[in-house]
Length: 120
Image (cartoon, rainbow, N blue to C red; front, side):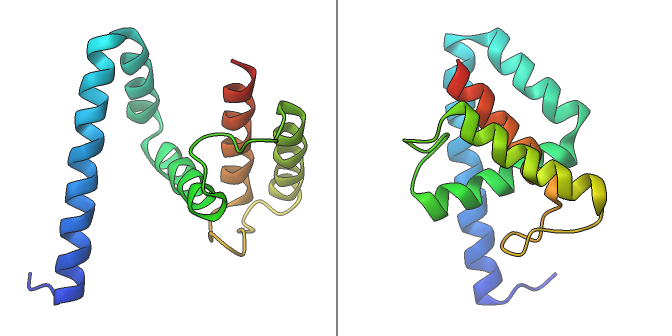
């Protein structure tokens, strides 16, 4: 397969980021192997869902400039947003978010993840 220069740059950037994250995961495994085992169980059992949640969270990170829960947003805020997305997902299961093109169910799941993080 021949890649255009733009595709090659994107591939190299993605590969570099993947290697950086794998290194971070390796370091995390050295500190708390059980946590990493649990995280990877989620990926093993729901790879497409976890990837979609990751895309939504990465979009939020770019949009709000924060990794994880944004400062000033409470667990209640995340629960309200999750329920709003869940309501759309329930009534119109195939509908996608305008900004990310991901299902509203994915946005609800991402917000529930942030809810858990705030509550830790």
